[in-house]
Image (cartoon, rainbow, N blue to C red; front, side):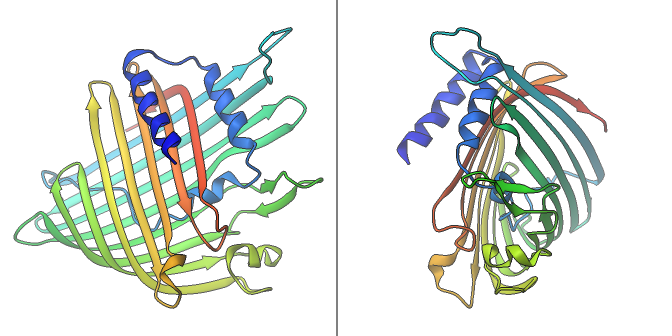
Length: 312
């Protein structure tokens, strides 16, 4: 595990000192696709909203940002070797926040889809996510503390494949799986950039393709599972240097009806470096443990550069 944290430290230095080459994204994606599992599934264990309403907000605040990033790597008689790769990822994030008196509400949507074409291996999905988060809060007299309720949903757009078999096997589809979660509890926000939450949770898993039921912890032929449990989460978002922002979170869900070693854990980190008003670079590093999908730790890392446009 130490090598991954060392890698993150190196990436921070690269963002601050030397803007990486666009071709590096293709290299990272090629490494990513060597792990024969559906990339989108790794993003969908989140049970808490990462949208935070600042205590200084009054009324509505709305922002909408879209990104388009891509890379291309080509090699011809190159002594060091390499794989010809081209990739494109599009995403759009919409946030709406409201506060009046002691009441606050936040809506966050995150849509992301990406594909890469790798020489001799065809086209493969590199990113796929649909996430909609709603958060209702009531601030206490000490506004660092609040009661909250979350209603969240996540799934993916497209089919995902396991490429370790020939031919590849479908392991996910739209609404297979899909997750609904509802959480109610207490939040503590000592600083605007940090929040800790704990609460009771309910999680519903939907798999509308019965061929995939057992892959996501359901009984054969089942399409729905309900889980009562509790959730813990910590979120951090702050500009760490003048042009680099770090967004980090750790989230857990523990089913009350199962042993604690089946706790779902999602540790997500993203560094976003802003080159100018339209160009940015980002590095995403995610670790997920979900015993329903796999007893092994799932890891994703993506380095990208592209255009970013603020619509609102």
